[in-house]
Amino acid sequence: MNTTSNSPGPARKKGISLERDAWLATLTVEGKDRLLDELEMLLKATDRFFNVDNLAISNKEQIISKNFYNEIKILAGTARRIVSIIRLLLVDRSANAFYFQAYVENRLLDDYARDRVIELYLNQSSPRDSLYLLYITFLNLGSLYETVAGTKKVSYTMYSNLGQLTSREISLNKYFNPLKLEPFLERSDKIHDRNIRMIVNSIPQEGLRLKTSIVFLSLFRLIRYLRYINNESEDIEELRASLLLFTLINAEAKLITKFLDDEFLKQKGNHLYDESIIATIDSLSFQLSIEIRKVFGQILKDAIEIGNLLKLRAAIDSAKGILANFIQQSIILVAHKFDRSISGTDIFPDFISKIEQSLRLREDIWLFKNVLEFFEQNTTDTGVHRNYTVQMLYSMVREYIYYFQDISFSLVRYSDHEEFEKFFDRIGAYRDDDLLNKFKFLELRKTIHNFKIFLETTFGHIVNRAELKDIPIDTSHLNMVLEQFITVRK
Image (cartoon, rainbow, N blue to C red; front, side):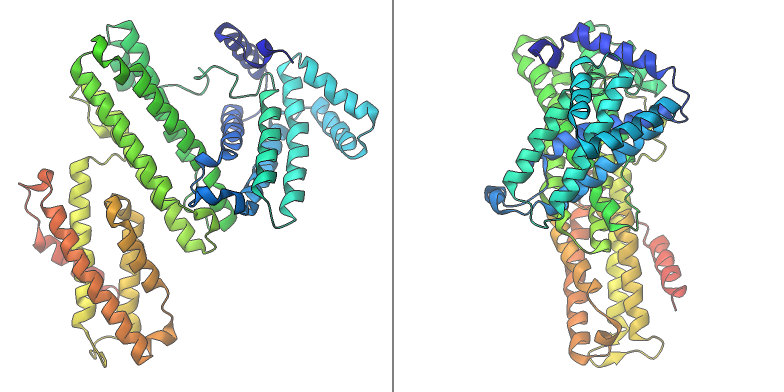
């Protein structure tokens, strides 16, 4: 296939997109837009997943010795989902006949079968043919992934070779290669919020208007990707599979940062834009880099190796929460550069401003500290006060931890995450029998005491935040909340 076909120019990309959209309009499949959006996302994520620089793994300098078994298992599941989506998009009789033909061809692999596939590669005369070809491709790739995973040991060389094969197959698809289409598709990449549309349309300078719209579209796309991640799943394989989408978000965030640097920050000396706009973009670029390093360098680091459901779900939940919150804040940051009257809740119903985040974290850290203090006050080195049992007090601490992990942990500053996670792991390791063991019980009291001191220090830092300087804490209200929390658990 010639270079022009592999790398079409803007006009050709536009033509492919229009031709494909016209064909899609003829489909009567329920939810076809969402299915196609998911298909494109999974194809792009699959390609990015083979780039180890996008993976949240430690010791990348020793990548040659890593076992990529878990990664290949995720890809096998993704291939099955891609095949399933194509089946849903093509439900007519001709499609079913083609599936049977593809089934036979993939198992007999005679000369006719090979000629048929080659013909599709060369022609792809319609979007339907491209989708058929994609079906065959991922039927084959999925089988290959499963076979390789069956060895239980997948070398870096094998992983890299599979990646090159997969990326080549995706790139050869004419109508359903997300890397070949226009960067933003009218069908899926839209700014639905009226406030943001008005901001973009009101920018008089054409170049700035275009670049600002790209910033908004890119950030809203990340939010769309995050919505596909089910952080509440009870299935560890589904949770692990979500790391594929996090990898895509990592790759997309890098592209956004590069765009901000190339199109805004490197133009600083040219005086194309107001200095305040450059300052806003500079802040966004820096913070995006920091948040991505936080999520992928610590929270999700080696998460693919985690075998404990609760621990993996906590990491996925925390990563999703941090990214969703940051992206929302980023959209409001850029919007405020053009219209200060817009509030976060005008665009995101669940939006929490930075000051609201600080207020919530201050209250929840205060409650956390006092729950631990209540545990200490009602226990001694030899047992517990007669109004409680050790199991009751321990459960109280565990329940507050569950609440904190779900609601406020994502608001904790990056440098404190490790201390919190160590405490969560230590508390979670205790069993009923351990609570009746004198030495284990003393160890538990010491762990709780030490972390309570850490929380007191953390609380002091939060209280001193500039945005909370003139907002006193309502201890009477918090004491009432604490009493209610304790009472219902007696």
